[in-house]
Length: 220
Length: 220
Image (tube, rainbow over all chains, first blue to last red; front, top):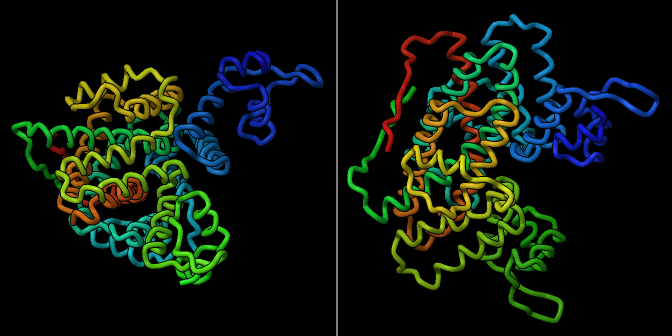
């Protein structure tokens, strides 16, 4: 299809499609003349992915470049061990932390993951992100208690087990997509569910639904 | 203190402090002359809050205005019922969805919360946010299975119960802050924990730590 048809199919202005071509977010079409090219289903798929990562995942252009690189990498080795593929989740989201790691004291964050007994690399890019969130909460006087920390960690473990299992179970051809793109978009999914869960809790408190009980998640 | 001292204490450029004064994110100081004013601890606290919401909560200026309005409101009625206060969580985060609700078909999202048995208002601002996330996941072919939906909903309920309990248990003087500001910042906290939990899961899979087991969260 021509660029105008591609733009229409992806519901994006032609100017935006051209911008993605210039910045490398979209791969070039097959040139049919000096000024025209033909695009196929792979371009439409890529545009849908970029759009989803941009609008829903709220990723920056640089982060999207990184996700696309992670997606391109495994195709070189389709029979790679599942666990190597799983590492892509970490790779693809490594920079989503979006914090200047060098300026952050990660001691408090390291203490948290130690208390949880989690196996975390000393140089994990997510430690500065956790330290940053902790320090922001502290700065306004709403730092988490040990109990709240535990509840959040249990919930995070619960979804993480499912995330990793989903990647391992996925078809190898789409495993990279599930790992890299899914993680960013599932943040938006979880945030929306969490807001709705609060609304549900408030409604339950107000009507005192019988049978409501405190629940515990077995730690992993 | 003078504006230069306030700026230093908050670790923000004077220009930024002046910008917040102009846009109303920071309340005016006590004027001591036509061109000078004195600021106190309340200004420093406010700057810390705005900075945390902006940098860690990633809220827009408009969203921060809404959080500040929610914080100002309950002071008029300090003895309000706890459950009315809890509604502030929903109020303060109502617009965080950041989606053009009118353009979104919320039928799929409504079906999800119905299947979960959650009490959600037909006009909840979080339904368009969930619908938006679902449609983005669908557009790139990684829509959640029923099982994945269940796991995420369990995790969301687990933190939501804790969030609501934390607000109810909080000192009335800071309850609004815990509800409104805490919710936005705890998103960043959870996202960081979730990334670390994935890293931990991958490490466990690789070393096959004995005793790892599938866990279930009882539904609420």
